[in-house]
Length: 358
Image (cartoon, rainbow, N blue to C red; front, side, top):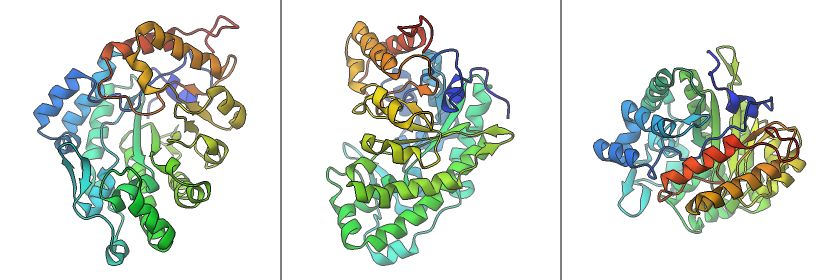
């Protein structure tokens, strides 16, 4: 596997020197771009967009045509895995993702099995291969999955939730059933990410979106332990190149040291975590990714530049291992010109003390 021409993103994850602070955005291929909306309209539905490799490739590349980003991320959805498990994913207008067959009965949980990603999720692997060809090694391609716990939340709740009452009731009253779901889902996520790596992704991110809703004890037992199980099972190299991994737990800033100890290469931070303090806490063990508040992108360009510079200053000069990103996915109403202002600021940054890239 040839190294990308722009490998700053990978070098930052490995805590090696970079030519500039690399930047990509969670959900960078998405609804804030008018060209995405046009492609989505042609696809007919969100699921059709995800399941048509040529269209998934098209929207993956759209933000790179607009902005000087340092990585592409596969266009897909975290819920493709439980869909492949037979739960019947659909998208209800105004309600978001839903499952026809949520996991509520003990027999259904005991029947749960990890799908073969080369069979039930082949469209994702085909999209990865097509995107890699189209990128022509210009920048790295990131693959991803939801964490076992985050996927379990949707699988048990049947969709999005404000309080996660159903899955948390299971956690406290029948932890054996939730552990069964998590074990199978961890197996599925590991196989899925390894198939993405074999298909050509050059880094992977695990989105633990709902881990931060748990108590400290429950987080370790039901989220972190299964995320670590996935990381332990990941391919660390492919075709002679190292494959770095990123773990992003929204609301997980209090557990940085424990996340860093999972064996991942980088920890993603949401906007509630102080970047300077995070660097002090984890030291050189892992790289850090983040962590601009997505709402900052609704401010004028000069305010965006000021906030981005504040974060870059907070990470500090003379170090390696920072990937600039948002603290969560980009909001669909974000003005596209705000992203341009952000990219220009980050790539033009020079450390305040030394006059060079921090």
